[in-house]
Amino acid sequence: MTEEKFIMFRNRLTKVSRHIGRQARRLQVTCYRVYDHDLPEFPFCIEIYENKLYVAEYKRHHRFTDEQYHDWIGESIQVISGVFQIDRENIFLKQRKVKGGRTDQYKKTGHQKHEFVVHENELKFIVNLSDYLDTGLFLDHRITREMVRNESADKKVLNLFCYTGSFSTYAAAGGASEVVSVDLSKTYLHWTERSMQLNGFSNSSPSGDGGKYTFIHADVLQYVETLAENYFDIVILDPPTFSNSQRMDEFLDIQRDYARLINSCLRSLKKNGVVYFSTNSMKFILDKVKIKSVSIKDITKSTTPFDF
Image 1 (cartoon, rainbow, N blue to C red):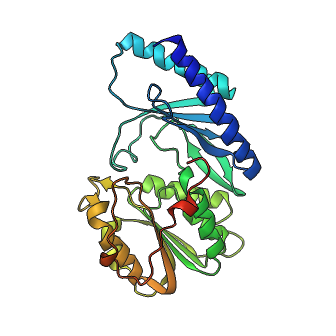
Image 2 (cartoon, rainbow, N blue to C red):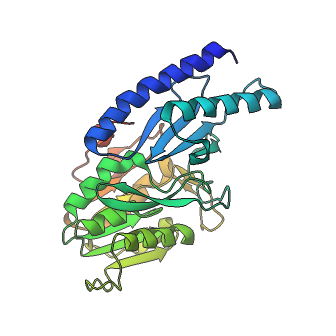
């Protein structure tokens, strides 16, 4: 690849880092995305986690030899390091394939366990930039998490496909009377529990929170069928687009299964309750006729952060 291409990459990174960084400082956001495949020659997603960088290379077909690829990735990381003034040892590189869901999300890619704590809206979260494809904190839900906190006082909250429990932590911080977190992965349920404890939310805490926080290891497709009616005030439903984990009784296809999931959640709601449903499927189509609710509102635009 020519030197002109790397100069173009450096100039692009410099421009977006200044623009997005300025907004981040104004909003006091310390974890944010700065680049997402802006230039086709450099198919990276770059996110800042305080004083560290997460760099995901989207796997693409290229005409590089192994030696050329090694040189290209090395030069690219050098440019990234220079622009953001972050040492190479604090830059974590991952390769991502274009995939439809989170099938590989639960799979370890390393064993360095480079965990550290980051901050968002006065809360603390454990992230791991070395061992998994995803970091432990989905930055695109920043605004939605804050919405949940603002609405959670004295509410019963259910977090399905909870991942590392950031929504659960926000709900607890908002004063929820009960928070139930459900996921298929014991690893991520434990992560959720640790993150909540980090913020002082524990069933054994001095504040007497005994029994307020529940962590359930289950296949959500099956679990939603067991929900009691008229119980929860808020349900967060953020499923993968597709999952065929061997631990599931059946595979999940969100385009096929969304109505079943949402309607099961709706049955569990109290009057005036709300289900927050999210999907990252670009091809997703919601047929309102299939949803048993009198009110459906698309909040995508209003909840998309400045860095997305």
